[in-house]
Image 1 (cartoon, one colour):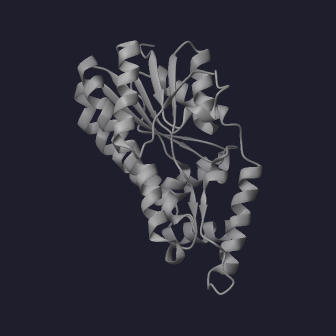
Image 2 (cartoon, rainbow, N blue to C red; image 1 turned 180 degrees about the vertical axis):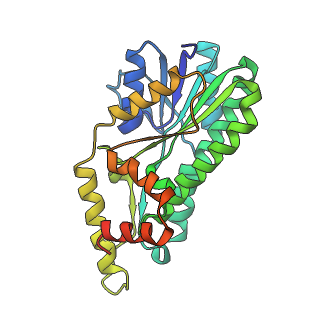
Length: 269
């Protein structure tokens, strides 16, 4: 495996931290990012550096720091992201802009920052951590699905644009895993006078139940490591429980209305 130096956004907790620890144990030099590393004074799992995916100047400084210390940057893992729930009609537009700025614009900024170095090296790997939710429009999670779906499609386009430079682009799409993403998720309030109130509250309960029974994020770390070891990885790699991954197959083969009915039944709508 030729990859040696890895940069992971959102590396201080959750899936990003699990990936960082696993890759460090496998002998890779890992740099994880967080918006304020002073909040983690006892963090010693791997190198933690400041970076905010919404602030281009912090991105440039972080990339320059890694290059100054290591002389190369082999792998970028775009993991930083935020959650959002709510009826589309009732979600404040500033929150819509924020989730797109973090979940889509953030990875785009990171990609633009590392591509020149990877092109100069003649080799590199970019892994976008998206979501199984990005392959379908989920009720009351429409904006989250939209951000991850946009990144899925961008991955496909970028693969073709960078193939001649020896750069691989892969989308790793987790299902439900036990992380702290819910603590930072924006929830549109459940309004008693809302026509969506009852259905939205039931969906929120279903989402919470899914998180409570979610898997260990180490499975995502293992999937990422498998991508690193493959010479020509596929564009998409879903990771999760069998039914979550199987839902993607069902979406491809079932008529649209049948699949929509399955989703409505799952969320008890």
